[in-house]
Length: 215
Image (cartoon, rainbow, N blue to C red; front, side, top):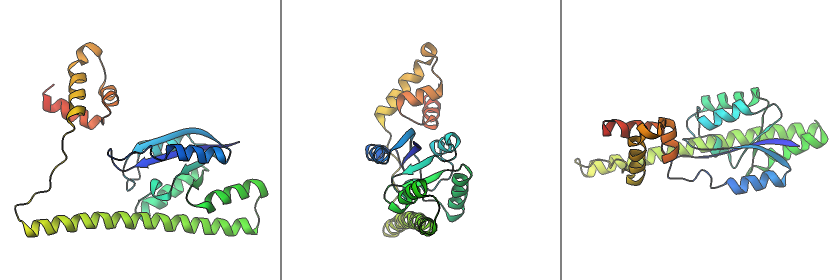
């Protein structure tokens, strides 16, 4: 049975990284993959170093599958970082399967059932070209989004020099939870990491709140 590592990613805490979890698990089941683990994180696809992706690459074994919903869930990286990630995946002996790119799983199944032949070699080249193309499109889409935001800010400042971009609004419910847990540390002896996990916040957020509270 083929072992698969399912990777899900969303860019921000406001997005649901688990959105495609059920469909990805169903896809793996339909193809007869044995799911080793599911890695979910809210992290920018423009960043090469991501905690859960790193954990996946450490845990995976040669011949295992790295399965993603689409290429942009794995990468919105610069060309240099994308090449680095591909080298890391190749060095681990992983096969990349992309749900919305049939050539990726057709190539894998063909290599498993019929070995290496001319058709498989052609499909391999085509598949790699498509993955690179989709990774490039994902990066360009991200760059366009950033540029649109910059243009929007520039236009607003031009129209009103006193205008300032609004900062992130504080999540009062999460703040209150973190504050309560921090104030109870003398009794619970929870670590910062444990407080962050319990409150559904990042450790950096917990440290910031702790500092502002003067604890």
